[in-house]
Length: 320
Image (cartoon, rainbow, N blue to C red; front, side, top):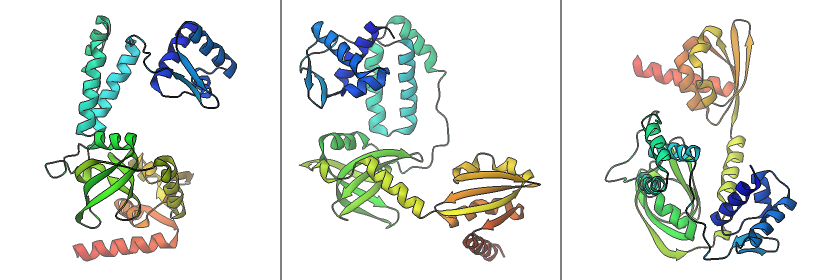
């Protein structure tokens, strides 16, 4: 990247955040802090009103904006791909907002870029099994945009949430911590005022939601990253080390399934293959093992053998 392009990119980066640290600029463009200082000084000398806070970072004085930014074909194609992913993995509210944003982006593209996007549009698809959701009049699945607003403004959320565990709907007031996507569903991590603790709420199980004018102190809570790290450590403490032996001829039917169950090691020993897993639940694992019948031998732990005997007994009682 030549210096003119780099200066333009730095200016765009400064417009994208309230404060940008020099280290962030250096990391993005793989250059030294000394070069960052020179580039920022060059922008200031060119008339760009860039301010600096000691020990914090750079900022652009309120009111200054670049002219509309033009997108390259590659950038436009990446945004189109993002739109396809949003259609598949977001809720009604975010899909609508992203679609509106894409309309604005398309409106500033040059004619050649518009033609390029149109030719790509019909040739990009995001496929895959969409799990059964709770969408409908009872579970509208359209609250991500409201949740994002509450997160950005530190506002309390009031919602009616249906818990499968309790098989009942309850009214909750929560202080949102963050959202994440996992296993085809969006999750809201929040401090629940009713339960006085952090809870994981499936967004598609929210029946009603409103963002209150009441605010909360973000500093009183864990960050989303800290919460997820805590959960990861707890899951590791509750895991089981499992080793099984499978006939080599059966391995072709297992394929990628073994990775879904936490495969750690795989070794071929003669006519059989030994697989080592780290599992959060033995009961869940037995359901998978049943598929392979007597071609599988459990090497460890004994608890898995006991769980498997229980599973087989349940099946025998059901069918005989």
